[in-house]
Length: 83
Image (cartoon, rainbow, N blue to C red; front, side, top):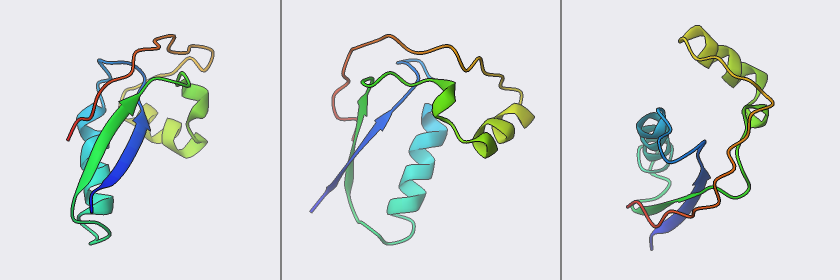
């Protein structure tokens, strides 16, 4: 049976989408936890940099990303299944 994974991205054009997808695949399929899964994107509730842990924010900052924790994504579109 396929597992359903719902994730919130910053927006439809999030530059880290493929990185996040690869990490999900590695965590689920790569560890033998599941054989198949369906990935669905949602934009509700809106994501903001304040949702990140301090460690995640620091790691991304080391790779050239900076965040304004007061910014949120106001999109309410719901994307369909990705896989």
